Amino acid sequence: MPDRSFLRWPFFDEDHRRLAEEAEVWAGRELAAASDDDVDRRARELVRSLGSAGWVRHVVPGSHGGARAAVDVRGVCLLREVFARHDGLADAAFAMQGLGSLPISLFGSPALRDRYLPEVATGKRVCAFALSEPEAGSDVAAVRATARREGDSYVLDGTKTWISNAGIADQYVVFARTADGGAKGLSAFVVDADARGLDVVERIRVIAPHPLGTLRFDRCRVPADRLVGSEGEGFRIAMATLDLFRPTVGAAALGFARRALDEAVARVKARTQFGQTLDRFQLVQERIAQMALDVDASALLVYRAAWAKDSGAERITREASMAKLFATEAAQRVADTAVQLYGGLGVTQGVAVERLYREVRALRIYEGTSEIQSLVIAGQVLQPRDA
Image (cartoon, helix red, strand yellow):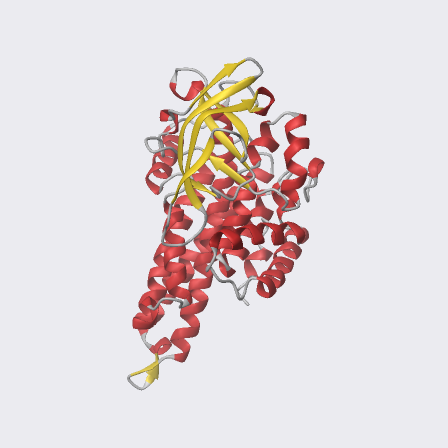
């Protein structure tokens, strides 16, 4: 059982503490024997399992089957931390249900919400978020995919890549250009997976396996009522979604880091060298101390950002970027140290710290690279707070 003393911090109420404890029990029972032999199958099963257990309700508003009236960021962070600690694929499955539906929750018409959100909440629909392109990753304003109005439909053309759940999703929130003008010309659409003209043209294999691929839109006709918000609001929709979800990426990193610290502590207490267990060596103690410091500092930044959003802050751009940047970089350090303390066993395939080392790496890239987070933070600091 990991250290749960942080749940007594003033960021949380009794409902949060109960949620974390219940999720820990469920994850320990349901995720302990996870296997990545068939990633697509497991991802679908995980979405169904997370939905059946009621966890996906926490990424959907109460009006459409959610656990609370509005999405509670602290609750989502707590769940991502627990799931990541047990199984990275379970965390990814849970996170994509939120990331792929939040634009609909925040900006969708009542009809769109009614059509998609209830089945998202129960795990019956698998979600995806399609923003990145071959030439548009960190530079969202460089999106080249287009959507032009033809009668009562929009026709989408272009390519999206690095899309989580590509090939297994039932729907994609797709960002495309409806007008020139950089960021101001983007719009968002909900595209069903069976839409004619939408194809998965490549599956991408990464070091921590999960469903990932490239989508091609070739005269893909989408009903006009699948527009999310209004034309030209796509950039705002994407940024608002990422603003809310970036602290939760930090929470997933925190879950990986806590597991790596737990594994390292168990190892150094059990492994004997030169006549004593490794935890007796001062150099090892210094490493453990730094790991614990990284874990607690990450938790403070993650849950500060989540608390700020839940307390009514309209934007948490600075806090969210700080949480994501520090927690993901710290988790990489913690996982690397855990591997080092394991010695040769640490780079053996199938050992927990080896898996954690691979799983944590992508978090420093997706939903805004560490470099982009640094630029965002600097911009927030240099801009007057009342500007």
